[in-house]
Image (cartoon, rainbow, N blue to C red; front, top):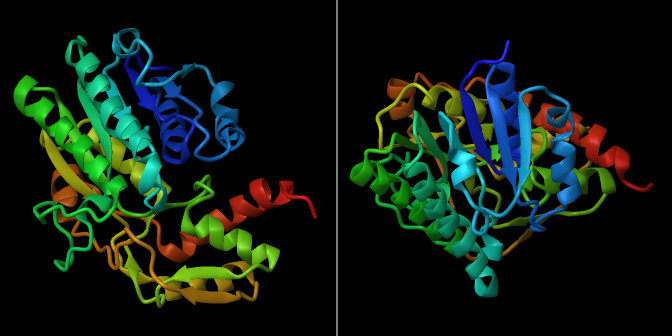
Length: 323
């Protein structure tokens, strides 16, 4: 039976948003999903993410741009707002596309907050932030108190969005929480993200290009763990607070390639090139604050998670590729 409570999820057709919508429906909530189907990557892939959702009772899809549409009817009656929408991509945020990042990561967030400020019955506004706000900090593990020093325009805009969320909590007592995601992966991962790129290269026999020596590290977080963090943040955590959400382990890119060889059973042709602007050398999160306040704890190890993403890739992506 569906609960009376209504959730609004922006970026509902995306990687994280679609998984979150499915979980909320399984938990019995009604869900309104909003998506602009921008062309950062194929809108067809996003629509494919929604196939099951569109058949589910309790789900409604609204197509529109958060920077243009009237948001008041959307937020009206929503007890929970999950703001997952945004312009992704570190490398593309440099240069002429920066205006898109300002619009979709800052202006869209401000408009949604302003609309939600007047909404009756709002219990929690949850913002999807990013580990990119930390930049190339030498302080490891990264704590919420670490000075933000983003090294990409993308990171700058995500930090600005996070600051907006915090100030609406401080000034208007909005029940907000920000979750800083660390390198999320799993089924439906965007085609511009590393593991998706690596899998495509592995099965097509193309080289895998690594920018750097491969000893750079990431704190990889499986999609179901990120979704669980959002569910926990609905009822737990301090209003106005920010929490690191990560996988709980620091892994080199070279180790990831070893796991991919085992999972795919493919010979990988790896090419190392110079690092790219805006790329962080290391990410490693201290998740103790989320553990204490939210009860968060990652459950899926890298080997298990990569196997799941590989299975999805072969079934959904590679099966549709021309031979």
